[in-house]
Length: 312
Image (cartoon, rainbow, N blue to C red):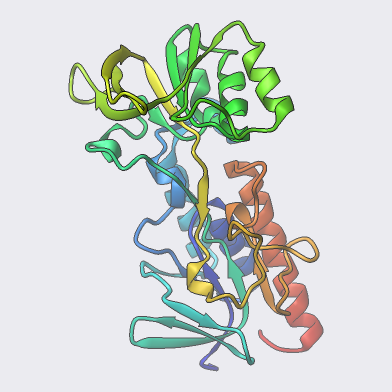
């Protein structure tokens, strides 16, 4: 067997694992580097109710486990390690993991984007227990509840507006006295009777009556420093995402925020390198769109290998 892989997939969320299923079924024997948080953002999501095929919902980690098993059934190989760097300057491409370098004809990047968090104590413990970064994922669980949304950009306006479909009251907490969101998004949020804006405030502490589920927060006035405690059944952070593209070393073209720019469907600026899921998606960021994207990347990689007459 050649020591050069047909395809290496970096990332293990719905995009990476779906790419692995399709690449494995195409007999490409993909190697998947899953990182230290296999399953991506879905591993910090509790109930996933909007993924087709699960009428009663499914736990995020469980969904990722069954996807991985499906890929392994067809011959994918999984390593629970971080990729330190890649070299796409010559073919075959090189992927460096610790002291080991792997060679591959094609590369599928599915490393996702990590939501920005506030970095407060116990934050990880509350994720999925009243604390969320995705309104479309978790809004349904807050019917007739009181919610805080943190942020001042378009995504914060969008999340707040969306959450009014479920919540009895949405308070939009922003650390300044003006939003950076576009005028149209501000108008939509400010004209919604269910949304109340809390200016010049930032969350400095999460509150929980039982130590497990969010029950409120401590807000600090960014002008006076005064602190007040507010009750809330849920807190949604909408302060942006950070695409996981640092390891690429600038070899793959990205936008100003670090998201991979695609030239045609899943193709990047480097021939033979493909990207899928949230690492290249600034709009949808859903498990189902990432999975569909992963399928496309694997099929594009297979076609590319065929056209080049390499692999298999």
